[in-house]
Structures are given as C-alpha cells and as structure tokens.
Image (cartoon, rainbow, N blue to C red; front, side):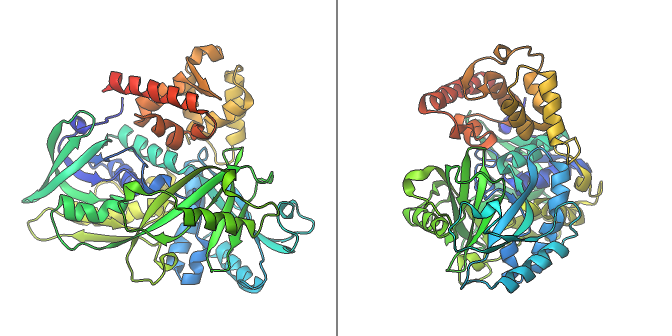
Length: 509
C-alpha cells in the first residue's frame, strides 16, 4: 500500500517538496544511492506541470534558434537512454516538418536538423530524410501548397505515468512518498531541518526532520520560499502557460507534424490515444495561481487557426473534445518574450557553516529530468557526503524490464497468457504497465474476473491496482493522469468511476 499521508514519514537524510518529474526523479536517484528520502506532494503526483506537457522526449529543435546548444545536446543524448529505461511508456515517433515559404528557409531548417542528428550521439533513432509532399502519404491531410518537408526522429512519453513510475521505483527502494500532504513550514535547527506536514485527507499534522531540504515545487517554487520559509520579495521563476487541444483523429498517418507559424512560434499535431489528435502548445506569460490554469479563448483560437493554416480541413472549436493547460516554471532570465525564456534548469543551493543546507530547483524539462537529478545529487553529496554513485542511466523503470524494441512481443505474450483479452486491451495494458500488467490481471481466467466494468476497457481490477500501487485517490487521478480513459467514457461512466474511487479512498485511508 503506498504511503499517502504525513503519518508515513520519519527522519530523513533528504526531504523533497514537490511530486512532479523533478522531485520524483531526485527522490529515485537519491534513495537508489543509499540516502533515506521523504517526499511530500500537496496534490496528486504529476498534477501540475508534469502532466501538462506536449508529452515528448525531445531535444527541442526550436531551442537551437536561441543557442541553447548545451540543453539540446543533453536532451538529445537522453532520448535513447530513457527509451531503454521505459520502453512501455516511451517510444520513437517520426515528425514531419513541412517547408512553409516565407518562414524559415529550407536550408536553415535542414542545417538545424543536421545538428539535431549529429550532436546528441543518436544510435537507434533513424536520421532525417526529405519528403516530396505531393507523393508521400504525409501530404494527404495538408493543403496542396506544401511541396517539400523534412522528417526527423524524437520520442513520445506518457508524461504523468513517467512521474508515477519514478515515484513507484523510489518507494520500492525505500523512499517515503506522501501525496495529498502539504508542507506548511520548514525551519532550521542547527544542522537539521524541521518540516511541518499536514495530511490534507485526514487533517493529521506531523513534524519530521531532515539533513537536507529540496524545493522542487515547480510553479510553486517561489511560494515555498516565501510561504514555507517565510521570506519576502521572492521572484526567481517566470511562469509561462502552455495549452493544448485534443480533437478527433485528424489523420491516419502514425507520424506527427511540426508546424511553423508566421509569428515565429511552432505547434505540433500528434496522434494521441488511438482515436485523437493532440495540438499544441502555446507560450504566454501567466500571472495567476498555477492551480487555476485553464486554456483561454485566445489560446483556443490561436491553436485552431495555426493548425488550419496547414490542414486541408480546418480545425474548429466544435472539434475539440478536451483541452489542458500547464504552467512551466522557467528560470527568469529576463527574456522579452515567453517563448524566448530559457528552458534550461538552474539549481541554487543555500549553504552556510553550521546550518542545514537546501537546494532550489528552477525550470527543467521532462526529457532532462534524469540529468537534473544527477546534478542535484552532486550538490547534495557535497553537503552530506557521497554514498552510492550514479545508477539511473541503466535503471529500468517499473514495468520497463524488457528490451527497448520488444513492445509488440510483450503484447503478444500477454495475449497468449490471457486469451480473453481483446488485442487493443492487451496493447493498452502493456503501454501503461509493461510487465506489471500481469499484476493487474493476476489469476483472471475470464474478463468477468476483472470485476466491475466501467466502460470501454476499464475494469475494477485496474482501479484497485492504481489505488494500491500508484497513489490514485480520485476519478481524475485515474481517468486524466494515469490512463486517459476519460477521453473514452461518457458522463455516466465517468461519474461511476468517481464514486467507486471515493469508496476505495475511504476504505484505504
């Protein structure tokens, strides 16, 4: 049973505030080296920025224009590392970049893609190639004026699951992962931190001790400094809103599109959850509370208009079946435009003789989370002393303990072991859970053995697994973060999942 509240905590070497990809990545790396680790997340894991991404493991082709060569190289090198570590939730995807006359010239785009292919040590992903859009199937959904395109490689990731699996691995190695737990105050007592925790489900309050405190609160990182530590005039991050829309499947091709816009920005159109197309993202400064972020009418119109510049059949508001927004906590480097602010991460330590040390994490992107964690551990080791060395480069995430190119084989094997599963259901289970799909199915001999049916291919056994193993508490935790089944269920089915999750939550807390 995962720890879901402050009552699970104790004394730690390291305590982390924030259950997004950076916090969970640092927790996993640290506990795997032998440190005792606690983590508190005030909501659900990945409930903030880490589930609001474009869901790509990518170098960031457009970052080359802003001379972010170190970041791009590090990210490109990480693509194949992460693919090997999590081949169930990460897989290669080809991207089609049509040349739009009057925007970036073809020679400049090709030069950027040459760098993209060669500076990151690409070994497994196929290289860039040129397409004739008049004959290639990728040209079929687009307007007829696009004659040439480049096709290049990146990877796709199930972002919310990526966070949860890092937390799961950390917990199995001994970390205390406390969700729905707010850090209300933190204060130094000599060489230790005293950290006040409030379990938001039970109201229980507890104080724990740690030798090192990590602030990985994402968009709330400045709030931790001001509200938890009690400091004034804090401004380290630039909050930038990125929004996405999801429409019914716009094209049949398995490749995604990279569209350039006349304002210099770019958007992606990506095959999503079998039956849909994901379009995004936007870049706009955000001034309000990150918990209230939602797509604006302006962003909706922008995404529809930008995609309609390329697709032969326009994208209209009425086509949208879902939208989501995230707030990126970018380090404020003084850039004039939101899209020009650095996507690189910045780690700042607070250390003084005789006082407990602290690390603040600013910025970062999901692709480079593992390298960020290694950089954070280097700073922690300076303060606490080294234990085990770096290990995550070869460390498979839960369910990902199979060869990077063996996904289809895993699906076949699962279908043979559980012949009552429809092919699509088996494929989905392996995509989400990898080898751990068998933990959900257990000794089931028929579909009825999976318990109550909630719609589509969602059954009680999966919900119970998500509560027991993945910190799920609400219907939204299941439907919109861990499975995305919310896109496939109707209102009554969604309400039934919500009610069942409330019952499980009461029983388990």
